[in-house]
Every structure is written in structure tokens, then in C-alpha cells.
Image 1 (cartoon, helix red, strand yellow):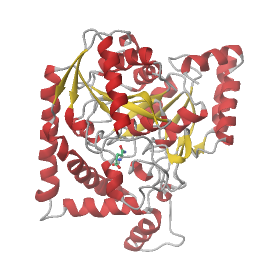
Image 2 (image 1 turned 90 degrees about the vertical axis):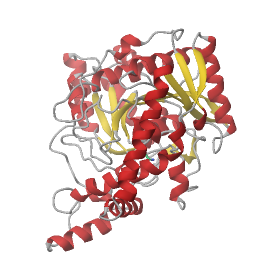
Image 3 (image 1 turned 90 degrees about the horizontal axis):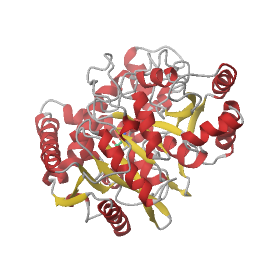
Image 4 (image 1 turned 180 degrees about the horizontal axis):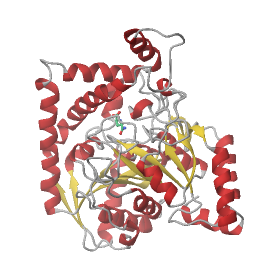
Amino acid sequence: MNVSEARKRAEDESTEEVVMSLFDNIEKSELNAFITLAKENALKEARRVDRDGAKGALRGIPIALKDCISTKGIETTCGSKILKGYVPPYDAHVVERLRAEGAIIIGKTNMDEFAMGTSTETSHFGPVKNPYDLSRVAGGSSGGSAAAVAGEGVPIALGSDTGGSVRCPASFCGIVGLKPTYGLVSRYGLIAYANSLEQIGPFACNVEDVALLLDVIAGYDPRDSTSMDKKCEYTKELRDDVSDVKIGVPKEFFGEGIDEGVEKAVWDGIKILEDMGASYTDISLPHTRYSLAAYYIIAMSEASSNLARFDGLRYGLRLEKDEDWHTTFSEIRACGFGEEVKRRVLLGTYALSAGYYGKYYLKALKVRTLVKRDFDAALKDVDVLITPTMPFPAFKIGEKTDDPLALYLADVNTVPINLAGVPSISVPCGFVRDLPIGMQIIGRHFDEGRILRTAYTFEQRSGVSC
Ligand code: GLN
């Protein structure tokens, strides 16, 4: 159900009906998309909307939120056992904005533990299943949000994207997902995995609804020191026109490791835009091959520091009896964190340790600068870059769990974008072996308007949507 269908149904029947029918879908579903449902509050809110009417761009529209976004009064676990029972005392900035615009929060979605993953298989609450094939992953780490939209009729959802976590599940579930420019959306109240890389981003069935949600969540917030005052009205940018758009196709994002069917579908997509008047040139982003290594060093280093706050005293899980601080800290973390989180804390701590800091962390930061310069240079000559979002369609649940490196490699086309801080959208562009795949459109810093317009034009012409 998209936003206009939800609006129409609320008019014909009632907002309560719309919300009830969603809970019905979710409760019957096998996808495992939600960790917590906020049924009572959502229904109360829906009845209030029916009775008193509501104001705002998202009045009466149900939304699902990834479980790393703090919600006052609603349990927020980050997909981890260590945060079981943690109920935030405040709302994230984006949640304040959603409430102010009349959205109805229906629940918190399943995710990889602390957003560390590409398949939602590291969640303490079990994997999310792909709505197109229940034996396959929904992608990650925001797999629950994407599956809720693609398979349970939820009109809009939020995820977070540190190295692809909005775009990957959007691609695997056949919906639209956007990672905004670093600094466009406040991270206040987003439980941090790797602060210098991540942004909260919208999911929806179509580009228009993604733009609408971005209109609501983007904007300056003094509580996030990296927040920028660069917001536009994104829904106003949506025109069926790309005649002025110059596309660059970076060769490093095609070829080795990329499924042939995926490659073909993306090229067909580029051709559609060309037929609509866009021009394209082949370009090169030479430092792309170092992106994965740099990304994982930086992300794990930041994570090892961020996750130090989970000490068994302040949030969530507690020991049954009081112990000294050292015992509490190590016992809670030993039983509260999953294997992938422990691996990353260990590797990140190692990369930051005296003696190795220069060799790993500092070097990764230098590589990051080179990657960013590649994007800056390329985006001087062209307006957008187009690549496959993921190298392949959704894989089988369990297929890659014994091989963390194979899973990290799946992020090859998404992590360079986070290193550079530029915006990027994944839009459905076809099917390979009956599984949806996504085309990634990347833009200049704060040029969300243009990538949304390009995606919108493509969506009108391609006829592929969820
Ligand atoms: N798969 C990447 C990782 O595991 C990205 C995750 C994300 O964007 N949160 O770090």
C-alpha cells in the first residue's frame, strides 16, 4: 500500500481500519519483520485522527521504524539481546518530526544486531525473510523495514545506512530506499554504529513517497553537530524529465563479482534514461577497489568505541545479582552481544590500538579521502552516477553465515558512497531469476532533488514498482 492508497482508504473507511488491517497483515506474516509492535498506541492515535482530524504532511499515515531509532516509551533493542527491556526516555529527532507531521508509528523493525550486517541474520530476534522467497534473506541491516513495506503493506518506513543498509534491503525486496547526504538528516537519537558514515533514510514503494518522507525528516538540528541546513522541498523536484541529466557509469562498479543478469538490467535502465534524453559517459573511480577495506576498518573502529557504553549498568540487560564493575561489564557483554558484534569490537579495538593505529585506522582515513576525491572529481563532469545497488539478488538464508568476508564483499557497490558522504537511491529495475534487483543512482552532496527526479522518471518509464 502506498501513501495515496492509504489516504484513500482512510477517507473511504477510516484511519483505524487502515491501521487495523496492517496489524492483521503483520500478525499473519511469516517475514519476522518486526521486533516490537506499538498496537495500542497506534490504534489510539488512529481513532484520534478519525475523530479530530489531523494536521501535517503525513497525517494518519502508518510508519515502521528500524529498531535503532529511539522512540520514547517504545522498547528499542537495536536487534540485540543486550538492549532487551530498554525503553528510551526521549524521541530521536526524526521521530519528533514524524509525530509533528501526524505519522502513526506502528512498531519497531527487525535489523542486524547494531546494524552490523547485510542480511538481517545477525539479529538476536532471528532473520527477516524475503517477501519474494521465504527461504531467502531480505537484505540488511534494515531488513525488517524493507520487508514490512514490500510484504506487509506498510506504506513507509525508516532505516539507517552506514554502508548500504537502506539500499541493500530496498534492492533485495524490490522497493525504493534512499541514503541521504551525510548531514542532511539529524542522527540525534539514532543509536550509533559508525557515526561518521551513517544516515537515517526512507523506504517506500515509490519515489514520490520516499521524497515525501525525506521532506519530513531532513533539516537542521543543533543537537547533531554534523547536521547541515541544506534541506529542499523534495516532492517539488519530481518531474518526469531527465533531458538535462548527464549520467556517468563508473566501470569499477560493473564486471567482476557482479551477476550478469543484474548488470544487464542496470544497463537496460540506463538505456531507458538515455531514451528519455539523458546522456551518459563511461567514467572511472580508481580508488573504488580500496573502499571495502577502508570502510570495514573505519566502521569497526568507530563501533568498538561506540559500543563501550553498553556496560550492563546504564541500558537494557542486567546481571541478576550485583557484582563489581569489571565483572558486570564483561559478563553482560559476553552474554548480551552476538558473535558478529564481538568480532567487530575486537577488530576495531585492534585497529585503534597504539602501534596499529597508524597502520590501519589512519591509513583507512587517508584512503577515504582518496575515494571521496574520486567522487568529487567525477561529479564535476556528470550529474549522477548509475551502478547496480547489489552485485546479486537476495541469497539464501544461511548461505553466507559461515563466511563473514563473503558477506562483507556483498557491500562492494554501496560502501564507497558512505565513505564519500554523497546521497544515493536504490530504485527497482527488474528481476533476475524472479528476484527483484535495484539500480543505484548517486548524486552530488545535497543534490537529492536530482537523484530523486532521475529515479522518478525512470520509475514512470520502466513500469517496475512494488
Ligand atoms: N553491511 C555493512 C556493515 O555490515 C553496512 C551495514 C549498515 O549500513 N548499517 O557494516
